[in-house]
Each structure stands twice: as structure tokens, then as C-alpha cells.
Image (cartoon, rainbow, N blue to C red; front, side, top):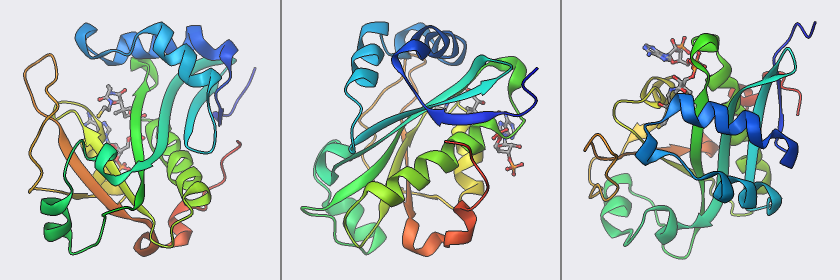
Length: 192
Ligand SMILES: CC(C)(COP(=O)(O)OP(=O)(O)OC[C@H]1O[C@@H](n2cnc3c(N)ncnc32)[C@H](O)[C@@H]1OP(=O)(O)O)[C@@H](O)C(=O)NCCC(=O)NCCS
């Protein structure tokens, strides 16, 4: 029996497990199609990475992170966000937390936290800018809002919520400056 939870980079063979997590975690209209995730995993590179959490040889959670132009990450002009945060984003690449889910029976065991640590560490290592800014779009009724607080994310109020979920709620945007977060916060041992 595998006693520990392993967080590792996703491979094509993880697709069935990832889709089970996706189905348990999101409403039908908010799920990524299998074909999309399959292509994403095949095309992983230094700008896009998927992670899985494995327990007893079963995929119990997955997450994804990317590095994008700031305008792509924020789905449009960045000026209001720049003003609110007091930072310069134009022509800057930023880290983005893209997707996160954990199967219901294994929630509240810090798996979402470990998958998020893995994503932040990956962004820290792959974002070449000196300034390491991270954004996350969160479903207001989802669990990332709790995690955002524990990782020190700040909610961006001045962002025009463009993304609607199938329960008619609108995305919340979170911001984290990895340079200020403190390296020790990302040091927890994770098997990658
Ligand atoms: C979000 C999700 C991945 C969290 O996974 P998880 O493994 O249960 O999260 P963790 O156990 O790492 O919890 C991290 C923190 O959030 C808190 N938390 C998580 N879910 C919570 C809830 N429903 N109510 C209160 N606190 C909660 C935990 O107590 C913990 O806080 P702490 O670090 O201060 O102790 C999981 O709830 C999920 O898959 N939800 C459905 C999909 C979803 O909402 N995804 C995010 C999309 S934006």
C-alpha cells in the first residue's frame, strides 16, 4: 500500500484519473473536455504544466499552471489591475493557476494545498521575469477561496469579472507576488 500522497507532473496515462477528478469537482458546463486536457498534457512545456496527486496508486487530485502574457492571463487590458496593485504589468509575463480539483472523499487533507504549492514552485522556477506575479481566477462557490487566503493571495477588486460559470456566478481574480511570499513558504517536501 502506498502510504503517502505523491505530487508529481502529469503524464498522458493519467488522463482517466484526471477526468474523474474533473467530473467530481466541476459542474458539467464548467468542465474541460477530455480532448482538451489530453492535448494540454501532450503539449506540456516550460509555459504549461499539469500536476497530479496520487494516493494508493489512484489519481485523487490534479492541478494546472501556466505562464502567459499579462493581457492573456487577465483576459484583456491590464491598466485597472495595475493601478489597484501598484505594479507594472504591460509586456510582462505572469504565472497563472489554471485548474484545481480533489476527489470528494480525499478533501480537507491538504491535497489541494500541496497541488498549489507544486504549481507555485513550478512558476517560481519557470517564470524568467525578476518580478514573479501570479494570478488565479476562482469560482466564487469553489474551495480555492480558502486556499487563496492561506497562501497570502490578495483579491483584485478592480477587475471586471468577465468569466461566468454555469451557476451564473462570476470569477474572482486573486493576485500573489511570489517575491514577497517568502521562499520558506514553498519549501515543504513534495515529491515531483
Ligand atoms: C478546492 C479544492 C481543490 C480544495 O482541495 P482540498 O484538498 O480539500 O484543500 P485543502 O485540504 O488543501 O485545504 C486547504 C485549506 O482550505 C481550507 N478549506 C478547503 N475547503 C474548505 C471548505 N469547504 N470549507 C472551509 N475551509 C476549507 C482548509 O481547511 C485548508 O485551510 P488551512 O490551510 O488554513 O487549514 C476542493 O475543495 C475541490 O476540488 N473543490 C471543487 C473544485 C473547486 O472548487 N476547485 C477550485 C476552482 S476555483
